[in-house]
Image 1 (tube, helix red, strand yellow):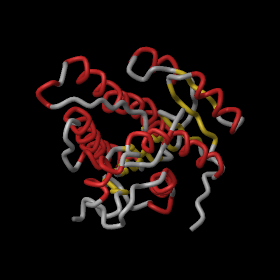
Image 2 (spheres, helix red, strand yellow; image 1 turned 45 degrees about the vertical axis):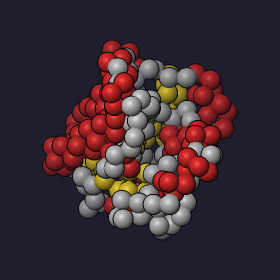
Image 3 (tube, helix red, strand yellow; image 1 turned 90 degrees about the vertical axis):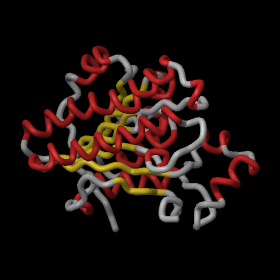
Image 4 (tube, one colour; image 1 turned 180 degrees about the horizontal axis):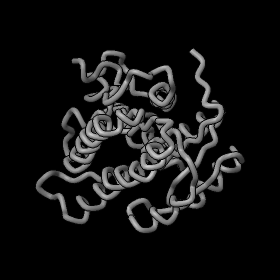
Length: 244
């Protein structure tokens, strides 16, 4: 199944590393004009070296006013991927207000804000569009010491459903992908210890974690016109973990 985004403009948040970077590059390969958003200029510089056609935006999405200023003149966007996220581990009884606020400010509040900016333009143009949130298996299955992260991803999934309900009449589709552990550079580092990985991997019927391209391919499908009747879903990319 060939997917083309020729003539489309896409915005990807958290595009400096991992899934976001791989998604931005894949969209560019499929013909889209890509706006890449991240808070680290060095990541944007290396991304532009790899793909000079990408338009960089350096901003901390946790800053509402700075985000508004940075994105107000980006022009029409047809495709949005809300990938930016923070993660922090603390046992439930040790969760701090700062940790709670930091994770929710990016994982939920920033996704809402960027979606508002983009969806207003989509609605005004009347041509519709597609939005994908990069959520997590952790939205649907509890993980020890991930209380706040799990809560942010659960909130993101419900935000997606309300967006699908309210934006659907304007031909704007909204969906989420919910991957298990993904073998990004960070994922490999965090889950390289077999003793740590085995309890989770043993619950995945396919017997392995996800690769970046597994998630990217699901995102591209949900963004594309191949999924025109798909709206308001959480799509597990988890090898069967949640099915069992």
